[in-house]
Image (cartoon, rainbow, N blue to C red; front, side, top):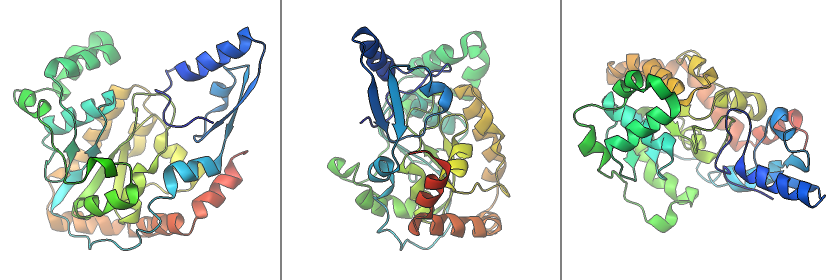
Length: 302
């Protein structure tokens, strides 16, 4: 049984953990059944001829989805901030997300976290590694004259470190930040990977009846709707960014699609929120009723 992001998948579907296990099986003429808590595309599973990779709904339920089911009461929505985002471990994608949020004045330390420090060289090196000779263009979206101070600083919230993965407790700390923010940018693990990785992070918005977009892998939002049944907020948000394979281009497009809302007033945000209230309530009920499990049972072969 495997869990977590396995360090992600490259654009060809290769994964170092699965490759190592598959190679060991080939050398020793053994076949292994691998239980994983994520749905993988068929083309990836076919790469590993000595592995039978199976998705387990129960494994994912126990790993990601069960923790917030006691959180049916939340603070009243009162938009005082545009966007919030919570960034714990220093995955490359989180360095990039926080850098671009700061660059476009979207990172409000009262409502967002960055529990790590880095340098401008770190950001520039990551942009170069992902874009090659286009880095001179894309660097402009991530770095400005104030970036050095921001990147070297840590912005955290007041919760005990040992409670970080106790989501039923963590939500109590994040609830007032979520309910006072118009939109939550979900900072998914390993967003620079190339296959969707669905965790509990988006549920923080679902259980507090909030709007969210995820900086995640390509087709993440499509995956969440197709297999899990959670609806997108299509009256407000343009999801073209979700289909962009390149992680830098996808992030720039995601941020660009939000900027037009950042200049609006608090009352404007409230009016726009009401446009999506039916979808917000649907997703809330879809989670607490357990209907997402029924959707998974219909759409997946266990």
